[in-house]
Image 1 (tube, rainbow, N blue to C red):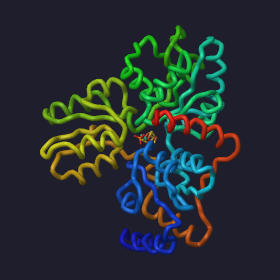
Image 2 (cartoon, protein in one colour):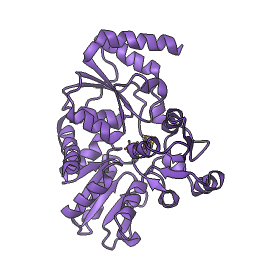
Image 3 (tube, rainbow, N blue to C red):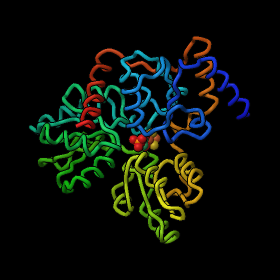
Image 4 (tube, rainbow, N blue to C red):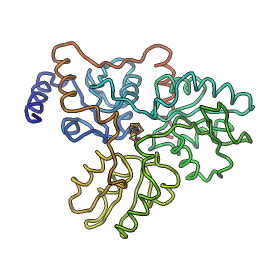
Length: 345
Ligand code: 13P
Ligand code: SF4
């Protein structure tokens, strides 16, 4: 069945020639990555879209916020397609614009000069809010740089929606635990209230918070010589026990540049870990949780859904087009551009 689908994808690509670029996040399945023109983490994909002259159609094999980011950065001048409308990010869904407005109103009463920073894993509305109020977006690759910039612009950062990434960055930057407060969506308050330098939203990634301290302990016993490396969306207590932490590209670099015979236990999305194991047959590569499940949003997309998206383009009737318009697109672009500019400082 795959072979038949692959052949049809190739035929559709021939028909579309240079009018389509297929982008893929590293968490996509092999059957999708096999057809990508460019594979990257969220930061590299955003940079690519912002800097390169892509074809008029971009088929984005990732999750919704990534396709929205591509549309915002290309000013709606390209047709950005998400092959499956169910491809969402549950972390991004943990912060709505309305919740953010409530939080902002509450925090404004504390008299702090706040700079809002949105992880790119957020809706276009949340990014737009940050752009409007002098803030920026960040990815796991540049969070530390963006946090530094934000602290130079105000007293405190409001970071959303990922509590774990926020806390891990605070630790990396040497902020004391008392300088980090938490916004609770349920209680609608922030604790502690005394001069926090960073306020983290109470969202989390359902995939990365599944990695537990016990998994690290088990890996240490089972593979005493292994390096344990994790993504910064993992809980701080897991990050503390790991040998290294970093963005998707950082984790890939560590494994691919390692000497033959080394052993790696990787705490991130399983599609990527399996691919790393296959692409590095001279090393041993395991997932930190042997029973890890793929990210449901990323896993929605398949070779078949990619084929449907391409064939719809061949028919001249694109399906799954992602469009962000008006003030939301303008302000979200401002927040994204600030992030890209901070990277050039
Ligand atoms: P990266 O920024 O490392 O690509 O991660 C994106 C993501 O969704 C991680 O769960
Ligand atoms: Fe979102 Fe987590 Fe999936 Fe990344 S792994 S896309 S943060 S749900």
